[in-house]
Image (cartoon, rainbow, N blue to C red; front, side, top):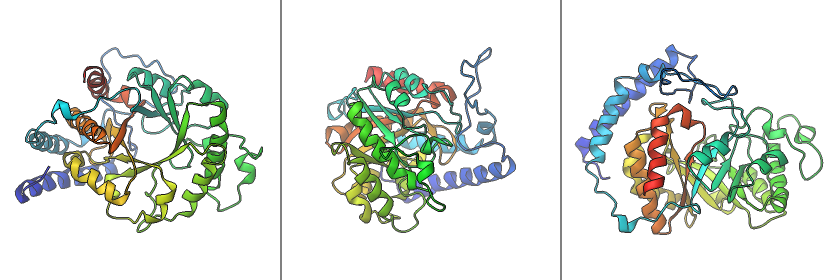
Length: 359
């Protein structure tokens, strides 16, 4: 969407007011952690997962009315955007739809081993992105029914202990191999072991590297990416390396040195307002990662501006646009995040489930 100067200013004012409210409330309520906000549970609700971090419904109240004011403007602007003609959209099928998840004590998640299984089955997805938990035979077997599976290999956001909870292809545990200061040493070991496991579990299609450039300021250095990439290809050169990139990072960092070590960009819109400029952001991604396929991430929980449930109408628009770019051969699929958000935001999850079933 092309904004007029007046539209841009109005949107920026609403964003800034929410950002300032967000900061104020986060400072006043440090006990309310990122990603744990959830819709109020229905009357009489009984939690059936004793391993779930149930989160809270207080945060949503604390960011009002600023959050609703921003959503009102976003929906007003969205109504001005012409709908994507049906004939220009590809179908979201078992081949190009994924669900992201895994056992985690954070973000309102659960430590249940089968959390991703339940999430993927809720959305009737054929493909899964298994993250957070350990890379081992038990978890590979549990997810072997899915057509394709990606597994996390880097330490970012991993559940405590999961990065080292395996016996790698060397026959030694990553803990035994680690020396002081080698925080990410286990990454290549994970990748190598996943490569070996892929010979036993043919649905393993590749690896996911979460938060590729979050902790780089100017340029993303290649050394850890090269090590992971080579390790992933050691036993199976058909495996692909996927990497998480956020729209707000594009154009601010230099990705040139890691181009040889990423096969697919997993692109996420951290801030809900970025979805309105979908075309511009896809083009920016292509400039930053020339020739790379894009796997489009869909956040049911908007972690950026509000840290609350995402706007269903914006997600429907995002899925429409993703399907348009799948038809163009630029986007290769979508991944929904994900399993833990179904209970946190049941209305948002139901909207996407209905969309997938009736597209």
